[in-house]
Image (cartoon, rainbow over all chains, first blue to last red; front, side, top):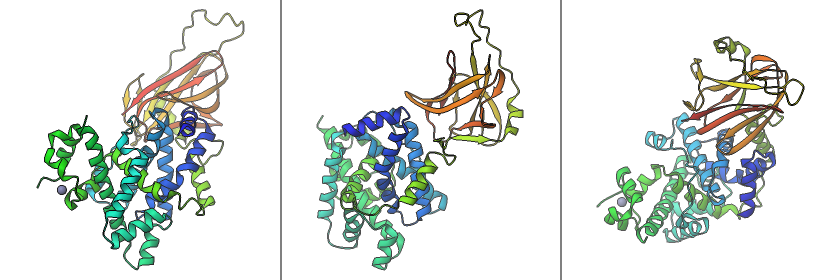
Amino acid sequence: MEELARVLQRAAEGDEAAYRALYRGYRRGVVRLCAAFAALDSDEVEDVVQETFVRAFRRVGQLKEAKAFEPWLYAIARNRALTALERKGTASKAKAELGNDEAPVTQLIPAALELEAAVEVVREVIAALPDGPEKHTAHLFYVEGELNAREIAEREGVGKSAITMRLERFRSRVKRVLLRRLLETQWST
Amino acid sequence: MVHLNPERLARLLADPRHEPELFEHLAEGCEVCEAFLATASHPLLDGATDAALLALGARAAAGAPVDEVRAEKTWRRIRGAGGKGAPRWLVALAALLLAFVAVWALRPRDDGGAGLKGGGPRLTLELQAVVRSADGAMSRVEAGQPVAPSGTLLIRYHASESGSAKLVLLRGAQREELGSVAVEAGTHDLSRDGTLLGFSLEGEHGRLGVRLEAVDSTGEVTLEVR
Ligand SMILES: [Zn+2]
Protein backbone atom coordinates (compact mmCIF):
# COMPACT_ATOMS: atom_id res chain seq x y z
CA MET A 1 0.00 0.00 0.00
CA GLU A 2 2.90 2.35 0.75
CA GLU A 3 4.36 1.50 -2.63
CA LEU A 4 1.01 2.21 -4.26
CA ALA A 5 0.80 5.51 -2.39
CA ARG A 6 4.16 6.51 -3.87
CA VAL A 7 3.14 5.50 -7.38
CA LEU A 8 -0.11 7.45 -7.04
CA GLN A 9 1.79 10.47 -5.83
CA ARG A 10 4.08 10.32 -8.83
CA ALA A 11 1.11 9.83 -11.16
CA ALA A 12 -0.47 12.91 -9.62
CA GLU A 13 2.64 14.80 -10.66
CA GLY A 14 2.21 13.54 -14.22
CA ASP A 15 4.98 10.95 -14.10
CA GLU A 16 4.72 8.73 -17.17
CA ALA A 17 6.36 5.70 -15.53
CA ALA A 18 3.85 5.90 -12.69
CA TYR A 19 0.92 5.92 -15.12
CA ARG A 20 2.41 2.90 -16.76
CA ALA A 21 2.90 1.09 -13.47
CA LEU A 22 -0.76 1.66 -12.59
CA TYR A 23 -1.82 0.37 -15.98
CA ARG A 24 0.35 -2.71 -15.66
CA GLY A 25 -0.87 -3.36 -12.14
CA TYR A 26 -4.59 -2.86 -12.63
CA ARG A 27 -5.32 -3.59 -16.27
CA ARG A 28 -6.16 -7.18 -15.47
CA GLY A 29 -8.78 -6.21 -12.89
CA VAL A 30 -10.50 -3.86 -15.31
CA VAL A 31 -10.44 -6.49 -18.06
CA ARG A 32 -11.90 -9.09 -15.67
CA LEU A 33 -14.60 -6.69 -14.55
CA CYS A 34 -15.62 -6.31 -18.21
CA ALA A 35 -15.28 -10.05 -18.84
CA ALA A 36 -18.40 -10.67 -16.74
CA PHE A 37 -20.45 -8.82 -19.37
CA ALA A 38 -20.79 -11.37 -22.15
CA ALA A 39 -22.31 -8.75 -24.46
CA LEU A 40 -18.96 -6.92 -24.71
CA ASP A 41 -16.57 -8.30 -27.30
CA SER A 42 -12.83 -8.11 -26.83
CA ASP A 43 -12.46 -4.85 -28.78
CA GLU A 44 -15.21 -3.25 -26.73
CA VAL A 45 -13.47 -4.41 -23.57
CA GLU A 46 -10.31 -2.64 -24.72
CA ASP A 47 -12.34 0.53 -25.32
CA VAL A 48 -13.61 0.35 -21.74
CA VAL A 49 -10.08 -0.23 -20.46
CA GLN A 50 -8.86 2.79 -22.40
CA GLU A 51 -11.65 5.08 -21.20
CA THR A 52 -11.26 3.89 -17.63
CA PHE A 53 -7.55 4.65 -17.41
CA VAL A 54 -7.84 7.95 -19.26
CA ARG A 55 -10.45 9.09 -16.74
CA ALA A 56 -8.58 7.71 -13.76
CA PHE A 57 -5.31 9.38 -14.76
CA ARG A 58 -7.05 12.71 -15.09
CA ARG A 59 -8.26 12.72 -11.53
CA VAL A 60 -5.74 10.55 -9.71
CA GLY A 61 -4.29 13.59 -7.96
CA GLN A 62 -7.53 14.09 -6.07
CA LEU A 63 -7.51 10.65 -4.42
CA LYS A 64 -7.48 10.88 -0.64
CA GLU A 65 -5.87 7.53 0.15
CA ALA A 66 -4.11 4.74 -1.69
CA LYS A 67 -6.54 2.04 -0.60
CA ALA A 68 -9.36 3.97 -2.27
CA PHE A 69 -7.64 3.63 -5.64
CA GLU A 70 -8.75 0.16 -6.64
CA PRO A 71 -12.46 0.51 -5.69
CA TRP A 72 -12.47 3.91 -7.35
CA LEU A 73 -10.89 2.57 -10.54
CA TYR A 74 -13.41 -0.27 -10.68
CA ALA A 75 -16.30 2.11 -10.09
CA ILE A 76 -15.11 4.08 -13.11
CA ALA A 77 -14.69 0.86 -15.10
CA ARG A 78 -18.18 -0.40 -14.22
CA ASN A 79 -19.58 2.94 -15.22
CA ARG A 80 -17.77 2.86 -18.54
CA ALA A 81 -18.80 -0.75 -19.17
CA LEU A 82 -22.46 0.06 -18.49
CA THR A 83 -22.20 3.04 -20.82
CA ALA A 84 -20.73 0.78 -23.51
CA LEU A 85 -23.58 -1.69 -22.98
CA GLU A 86 -26.06 1.13 -23.14
CA ARG A 87 -24.60 2.19 -26.48
CA LYS A 88 -25.16 -1.36 -27.69
CA GLY A 89 -28.67 -1.30 -26.31
CA THR A 90 -28.05 -4.25 -24.03
CA ALA A 91 -28.27 -2.55 -20.65
CA SER A 92 -31.58 -1.79 -19.06
CA LYS A 93 -32.48 1.86 -19.03
CA ALA A 94 -32.60 2.02 -15.25
CA LYS A 95 -29.12 0.65 -15.03
CA ALA A 96 -27.78 3.08 -17.55
CA GLU A 97 -29.33 6.02 -15.75
CA LEU A 98 -28.08 5.01 -12.38
CA GLY A 99 -24.72 4.13 -13.83
CA ASN A 100 -23.99 7.68 -14.81
CA ASP A 101 -22.85 8.79 -11.37
CA GLU A 102 -19.21 9.70 -11.49
CA ALA A 103 -17.21 7.80 -8.93
CA PRO A 104 -16.39 10.26 -6.15
CA VAL A 105 -12.67 10.58 -5.95
CA THR A 106 -12.50 12.08 -2.51
CA GLN A 107 -14.13 9.35 -0.48
CA LEU A 108 -12.33 7.36 2.19
CA ILE A 109 -12.81 3.62 2.42
CA PRO A 110 -14.71 2.65 5.59
CA ALA A 111 -13.24 -0.30 7.51
CA ALA A 112 -16.22 -2.50 6.60
CA LEU A 113 -15.38 -2.13 2.91
CA GLU A 114 -11.63 -2.56 3.14
CA LEU A 115 -10.31 -5.22 0.81
CA GLU A 116 -9.52 -7.97 3.30
CA ALA A 117 -12.86 -7.70 5.08
CA ALA A 118 -14.70 -7.57 1.77
CA VAL A 119 -12.88 -10.60 0.36
CA GLU A 120 -13.90 -12.50 3.49
CA VAL A 121 -17.52 -11.56 2.76
CA VAL A 122 -17.21 -12.93 -0.78
CA ARG A 123 -15.89 -16.23 0.56
CA GLU A 124 -18.75 -16.46 3.04
CA VAL A 125 -21.34 -15.74 0.35
CA ILE A 126 -19.91 -18.44 -1.92
CA ALA A 127 -19.75 -20.95 0.91
CA ALA A 128 -23.37 -20.26 1.87
CA LEU A 129 -24.71 -20.75 -1.67
CA PRO A 130 -26.37 -24.09 -2.37
CA ASP A 131 -24.70 -26.16 -5.07
CA GLY A 132 -26.15 -25.15 -8.41
CA PRO A 133 -25.50 -23.13 -11.55
CA GLU A 134 -24.94 -19.82 -9.74
CA LYS A 135 -22.37 -21.19 -7.36
CA HIS A 136 -20.66 -23.11 -10.13
CA THR A 137 -20.50 -20.04 -12.39
CA ALA A 138 -19.31 -17.75 -9.60
CA HIS A 139 -16.60 -20.24 -8.75
CA LEU A 140 -15.44 -20.55 -12.34
CA PHE A 141 -15.42 -16.83 -12.95
CA TYR A 142 -14.33 -15.31 -9.67
CA VAL A 143 -12.38 -18.02 -7.87
CA GLU A 144 -10.61 -19.61 -10.82
CA GLY A 145 -10.51 -16.22 -12.47
CA GLU A 146 -9.47 -17.18 -15.98
CA LEU A 147 -12.45 -17.77 -18.27
CA ASN A 148 -14.66 -14.89 -19.35
CA ALA A 149 -18.46 -15.07 -19.43
CA ARG A 150 -18.47 -15.98 -23.11
CA GLU A 151 -16.04 -18.84 -22.61
CA ILE A 152 -18.00 -20.14 -19.63
CA ALA A 153 -21.21 -20.04 -21.69
CA GLU A 154 -19.54 -22.03 -24.44
CA ARG A 155 -18.09 -24.55 -22.04
CA GLU A 156 -21.36 -25.01 -20.17
CA GLY A 157 -23.49 -25.00 -23.27
CA VAL A 158 -25.76 -22.21 -22.04
CA GLY A 159 -26.57 -18.77 -23.41
CA LYS A 160 -24.08 -15.94 -22.86
CA SER A 161 -26.63 -13.75 -21.15
CA ALA A 162 -27.48 -16.52 -18.68
CA ILE A 163 -23.87 -16.49 -17.46
CA THR A 164 -23.84 -12.72 -17.11
CA MET A 165 -27.11 -12.90 -15.17
CA ARG A 166 -25.72 -15.52 -12.78
CA LEU A 167 -22.63 -13.43 -12.18
CA GLU A 168 -24.70 -10.28 -11.64
CA ARG A 169 -26.95 -12.16 -9.25
CA PHE A 170 -23.99 -13.41 -7.27
CA ARG A 171 -22.42 -9.97 -7.26
CA SER A 172 -25.58 -8.38 -5.91
CA ARG A 173 -25.63 -10.86 -3.03
CA VAL A 174 -22.12 -9.78 -2.13
CA LYS A 175 -23.11 -6.16 -2.50
CA ARG A 176 -26.09 -6.68 -0.17
CA VAL A 177 -23.89 -8.23 2.54
CA LEU A 178 -21.31 -5.46 2.17
CA LEU A 179 -24.04 -2.86 2.47
CA ARG A 180 -25.28 -4.52 5.63
CA ARG A 181 -21.73 -4.59 7.06
CA LEU A 182 -21.31 -0.93 6.25
CA LEU A 183 -24.61 -0.12 7.95
CA GLU A 184 -23.69 -2.19 11.01
CA THR A 185 -20.70 0.02 11.70
CA GLN A 186 -22.91 3.09 11.33
CA TRP A 187 -25.51 1.62 13.65
CA SER A 188 -23.02 1.11 16.41
CA THR A 189 -21.50 4.58 16.29
CA MET B 1 -42.19 -6.70 4.05
CA VAL B 2 -40.12 -3.57 3.45
CA HIS B 3 -37.66 -3.77 0.54
CA LEU B 4 -34.97 -1.44 -0.71
CA ASN B 5 -35.82 1.43 -3.00
CA PRO B 6 -33.84 4.59 -3.80
CA GLU B 7 -35.39 6.67 -1.00
CA ARG B 8 -35.02 3.98 1.66
CA LEU B 9 -31.45 3.29 0.62
CA ALA B 10 -30.64 6.98 0.96
CA ARG B 11 -32.23 7.07 4.44
CA LEU B 12 -30.40 3.90 5.47
CA LEU B 13 -27.06 5.30 4.38
CA ALA B 14 -27.73 8.56 6.19
CA ASP B 15 -28.51 6.63 9.39
CA PRO B 16 -29.55 2.95 9.49
CA ARG B 17 -31.60 3.67 12.63
CA HIS B 18 -34.06 5.51 10.39
CA GLU B 19 -34.95 2.17 8.79
CA PRO B 20 -34.62 -0.46 11.54
CA GLU B 21 -36.88 -3.00 9.85
CA LEU B 22 -35.00 -2.76 6.56
CA PHE B 23 -31.67 -2.87 8.37
CA GLU B 24 -32.69 -6.20 9.92
CA HIS B 25 -34.08 -7.44 6.64
CA LEU B 26 -30.77 -6.88 4.86
CA ALA B 27 -29.11 -9.46 7.07
CA GLU B 28 -30.87 -12.12 4.99
CA GLY B 29 -30.86 -12.85 1.30
CA CYS B 30 -33.76 -11.23 -0.52
CA GLU B 31 -34.28 -11.44 -4.27
CA VAL B 32 -36.17 -8.16 -4.40
CA CYS B 33 -33.52 -6.17 -2.55
CA GLU B 34 -30.68 -7.82 -4.43
CA ALA B 35 -32.33 -7.13 -7.76
CA PHE B 36 -32.59 -3.50 -6.68
CA LEU B 37 -28.94 -3.42 -5.65
CA ALA B 38 -27.88 -4.93 -8.96
CA THR B 39 -29.05 -1.80 -10.75
CA ALA B 40 -28.58 0.85 -8.05
CA SER B 41 -25.30 2.66 -8.48
CA HIS B 42 -23.31 3.43 -5.36
CA PRO B 43 -19.74 3.97 -6.54
CA LEU B 44 -18.11 3.27 -3.18
CA LEU B 45 -20.09 0.08 -2.54
CA ASP B 46 -19.83 -0.99 -6.18
CA GLY B 47 -16.10 -0.38 -6.27
CA ALA B 48 -15.51 -2.24 -3.00
CA THR B 49 -17.67 -5.14 -4.21
CA ASP B 50 -15.76 -5.44 -7.46
CA ALA B 51 -12.38 -5.07 -5.77
CA ALA B 52 -13.24 -7.96 -3.44
CA LEU B 53 -14.66 -10.17 -6.19
CA LEU B 54 -11.69 -9.58 -8.46
CA ALA B 55 -9.16 -10.06 -5.67
CA LEU B 56 -10.44 -13.58 -5.20
CA GLY B 57 -9.17 -14.91 -8.50
CA ALA B 58 -6.26 -12.53 -8.85
CA ARG B 59 -3.74 -14.86 -7.29
CA ALA B 60 -4.97 -17.87 -9.22
CA ALA B 61 -4.78 -15.94 -12.48
CA ALA B 62 -1.47 -14.22 -11.72
CA GLY B 63 0.35 -16.81 -13.81
CA ALA B 64 -2.15 -16.61 -16.66
CA PRO B 65 -0.72 -15.34 -19.92
CA VAL B 66 -1.26 -11.66 -20.66
CA ASP B 67 -1.98 -10.62 -24.21
CA GLU B 68 0.94 -8.22 -24.36
CA VAL B 69 0.20 -7.02 -27.87
CA ARG B 70 -3.33 -6.06 -26.94
CA ALA B 71 -2.23 -4.50 -23.65
CA GLU B 72 0.43 -2.42 -25.42
CA LYS B 73 -1.96 -1.33 -28.12
CA THR B 74 -4.46 -0.07 -25.59
CA TRP B 75 -1.68 1.59 -23.61
CA ARG B 76 -0.66 3.55 -26.69
CA ARG B 77 -4.26 4.63 -27.14
CA ILE B 78 -4.44 5.73 -23.51
CA ARG B 79 -1.32 7.81 -23.80
CA GLY B 80 -2.16 9.20 -27.21
CA ALA B 81 -1.76 7.58 -30.59
CA GLY B 82 0.59 10.34 -31.71
CA GLY B 83 3.39 9.02 -29.54
CA LYS B 84 5.72 11.47 -27.77
CA GLY B 85 3.52 10.83 -24.74
CA ALA B 86 0.89 13.25 -26.00
CA PRO B 87 -2.18 12.39 -23.95
CA ARG B 88 -5.39 11.49 -25.67
CA TRP B 89 -7.21 14.58 -24.47
CA LEU B 90 -4.81 16.84 -26.27
CA VAL B 91 -6.52 17.00 -29.61
CA ALA B 92 -5.34 18.43 -32.88
CA LEU B 93 -7.83 20.61 -34.67
CA ALA B 94 -8.08 21.96 -38.15
CA ALA B 95 -6.88 25.54 -38.37
CA LEU B 96 -10.16 26.53 -39.97
CA LEU B 97 -11.87 26.72 -36.63
CA LEU B 98 -9.85 29.69 -35.68
CA ALA B 99 -11.62 32.04 -38.02
CA PHE B 100 -14.32 31.96 -35.37
CA VAL B 101 -12.09 32.35 -32.40
CA ALA B 102 -10.47 35.40 -33.84
CA VAL B 103 -13.42 37.53 -32.75
CA TRP B 104 -11.49 39.17 -29.98
CA ALA B 105 -7.99 40.42 -29.60
CA LEU B 106 -6.09 40.22 -26.38
CA ARG B 107 -4.90 43.42 -24.92
CA PRO B 108 -1.14 43.45 -24.97
CA ARG B 109 -0.19 43.68 -21.32
CA ASP B 110 1.05 47.06 -20.22
CA ASP B 111 4.10 46.12 -18.29
CA GLY B 112 4.90 49.66 -17.26
CA GLY B 113 8.63 49.29 -17.48
CA ALA B 114 8.80 45.85 -15.86
CA GLY B 115 11.36 43.47 -17.19
CA LEU B 116 14.23 45.88 -17.09
CA LYS B 117 16.27 43.89 -14.62
CA GLY B 118 17.28 41.23 -17.13
CA GLY B 119 18.45 43.74 -19.67
CA GLY B 120 17.24 41.83 -22.74
CA PRO B 121 13.70 41.55 -23.99
CA ARG B 122 11.30 39.88 -21.61
CA LEU B 123 8.70 37.39 -22.73
CA THR B 124 5.33 38.05 -21.20
CA LEU B 125 2.34 35.83 -21.84
CA GLU B 126 -1.36 36.33 -21.53
CA LEU B 127 -3.92 33.59 -22.19
CA GLN B 128 -7.53 33.54 -23.18
CA ALA B 129 -9.76 30.46 -23.21
CA VAL B 130 -12.46 29.66 -25.73
CA VAL B 131 -14.70 26.62 -25.59
CA ARG B 132 -15.95 25.07 -28.76
CA SER B 133 -19.10 23.15 -27.89
CA ALA B 134 -20.09 19.86 -29.46
CA ASP B 135 -22.34 21.70 -31.95
CA GLY B 136 -19.42 23.84 -33.05
CA ALA B 137 -20.41 27.07 -31.31
CA MET B 138 -17.52 29.08 -29.89
CA SER B 139 -17.66 31.00 -26.66
CA ARG B 140 -15.10 32.92 -24.75
CA VAL B 141 -14.57 31.75 -21.18
CA GLU B 142 -13.75 34.09 -18.33
CA ALA B 143 -11.54 32.99 -15.44
CA GLY B 144 -13.23 30.46 -13.20
CA GLN B 145 -16.36 30.38 -15.33
CA PRO B 146 -18.24 27.07 -15.20
CA VAL B 147 -18.29 25.11 -18.45
CA ALA B 148 -19.93 21.80 -19.36
CA PRO B 149 -17.76 18.67 -19.60
CA SER B 150 -18.13 18.48 -23.36
CA GLY B 151 -16.60 20.33 -26.21
CA THR B 152 -13.04 21.46 -26.65
CA LEU B 153 -10.99 24.07 -24.90
CA LEU B 154 -8.87 26.25 -27.15
CA ILE B 155 -6.21 28.66 -26.03
CA ARG B 156 -5.25 31.97 -27.56
CA TYR B 157 -2.15 33.67 -26.25
CA HIS B 158 -0.48 36.98 -26.53
CA ALA B 159 3.30 36.96 -26.27
CA SER B 160 5.50 40.02 -26.12
CA GLU B 161 8.42 38.16 -27.69
CA SER B 162 8.98 34.90 -29.51
CA GLY B 163 10.32 32.06 -27.45
CA SER B 164 9.26 28.77 -26.03
CA ALA B 165 7.06 27.84 -23.10
CA LYS B 166 6.17 24.74 -21.21
CA LEU B 167 2.54 23.67 -21.62
CA VAL B 168 1.07 22.52 -18.30
CA LEU B 169 -2.35 21.19 -17.43
CA LEU B 170 -3.58 21.65 -13.86
CA ARG B 171 -6.40 19.65 -12.34
CA GLY B 172 -6.87 20.59 -8.74
CA ALA B 173 -3.44 19.96 -7.23
CA GLN B 174 -2.43 17.69 -10.08
CA ARG B 175 0.06 19.06 -12.52
CA GLU B 176 0.70 17.50 -15.88
CA GLU B 177 3.38 18.70 -18.23
CA LEU B 178 2.53 18.36 -21.88
CA GLY B 179 5.86 19.31 -23.36
CA SER B 180 6.97 22.61 -24.75
CA VAL B 181 5.45 24.78 -27.42
CA ALA B 182 6.95 27.54 -29.49
CA VAL B 183 5.27 30.89 -28.95
CA GLU B 184 5.46 33.73 -31.41
CA ALA B 185 5.35 37.43 -30.69
CA GLY B 186 1.84 38.80 -31.03
CA THR B 187 -1.55 37.18 -30.61
CA HIS B 188 -1.86 33.60 -31.79
CA ASP B 189 -3.72 30.39 -31.21
CA LEU B 190 -1.90 27.72 -29.33
CA SER B 191 -0.40 25.22 -31.72
CA ARG B 192 2.46 22.80 -32.03
CA ASP B 193 4.21 21.77 -35.22
CA GLY B 194 1.70 23.77 -37.20
CA THR B 195 -1.31 22.02 -35.66
CA LEU B 196 -3.79 23.83 -33.51
CA LEU B 197 -4.02 22.38 -30.01
CA GLY B 198 -7.28 21.87 -28.19
CA PHE B 199 -8.17 20.12 -24.96
CA SER B 200 -11.08 17.73 -24.93
CA LEU B 201 -13.21 18.51 -21.88
CA GLU B 202 -14.99 15.18 -21.94
CA GLY B 203 -14.71 13.46 -18.59
CA GLU B 204 -13.19 16.46 -16.89
CA HIS B 205 -14.58 17.57 -13.58
CA GLY B 206 -13.73 20.44 -11.29
CA ARG B 207 -11.04 23.04 -11.62
CA LEU B 208 -9.02 22.88 -14.80
CA GLY B 209 -6.15 25.18 -15.59
CA VAL B 210 -3.98 25.51 -18.64
CA ARG B 211 -0.68 27.25 -18.16
CA LEU B 212 2.13 28.37 -20.40
CA GLU B 213 5.35 28.69 -18.46
CA ALA B 214 8.15 30.67 -20.04
CA VAL B 215 11.41 31.50 -18.31
CA ASP B 216 10.21 34.77 -16.86
CA SER B 217 6.47 34.77 -17.30
CA THR B 218 3.53 32.48 -16.83
CA GLY B 219 0.17 32.80 -18.51
CA GLU B 220 -2.75 30.81 -17.18
CA VAL B 221 -6.43 30.28 -17.68
CA THR B 222 -8.66 28.48 -15.23
CA LEU B 223 -12.14 27.15 -15.65
CA GLU B 224 -14.56 25.15 -13.62
CA VAL B 225 -15.85 22.07 -15.43
CA ARG B 226 -19.21 20.85 -14.16
ZN1 LIG C 1 -36.01 -7.31 0.43
